Image 1 (cartoon, rainbow, N blue to C red):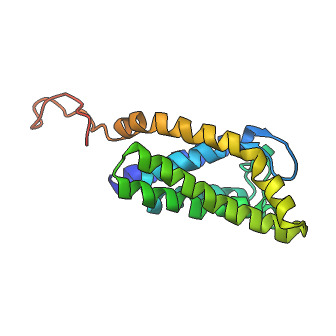
Image 2 (image 1 turned 180 degrees about the vertical axis):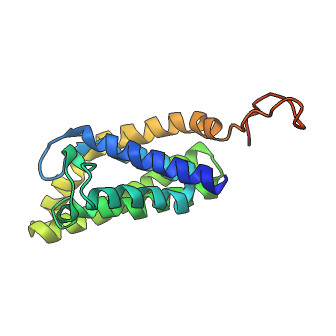
Image 3 (image 1 turned 90 degrees about the vertical axis):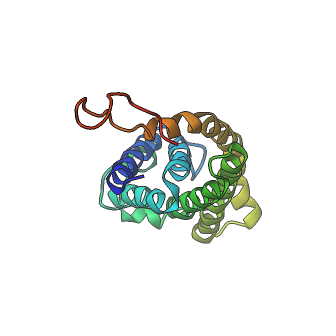
Length: 191
C-alpha cells in the first residue's frame, strides 16, 4: 500500500473512531462504545505501523480538545481518568491486531485471533489503569471494566471478520487508467 493511501486511510479511520465514540451507552465509569470496531478494522487493514498512526491521530485530536472521546468529551485530563487506560490501550491493541493479522496473511482465523489478542491488550491496559485510578479491588475492576463489554466485543469481532474481506478488496482497487495512456480503462481488484 502506498504511503499517501495509507495516510489517508489512517486519517479516515481516526475520524471513524471518533464517530464510533459518539455511540456510547453509559454502564458505569467505562461506557460501551462502537469505536473499538473501527480500531479493530484499522489494525486489520493498515497493519501495526499505520494503525498506530491512525490511533495516534485520534488520541492527539482528543487531547487537543476536539470532542472525539466517548460521549463527545475531550482533553488531556481524560487520560488521567478511569477510561484513560482504554484510550492509551488502543495503541497496543491496534499494533497487536495488525501484527497477528499480517502473520496470517488475511486468513479469517488469524484475523479473529488478532482481534482477540488486541482486545486482551486493550483490557489489560484499561483494567490496570481503572484499578489504579479508582483503587477498587481487582475482581471489581474486572467486573466493571471487562464483563459488561465481552458480548459487544464478541459481536464486533464477528462483524469485523465478516466485513474485512470486502474492505480489503475495496481499498486495493487501483485507479482507472486513461485510455491511450498505456493501459485500459478497467479497474482491477488487487491482491
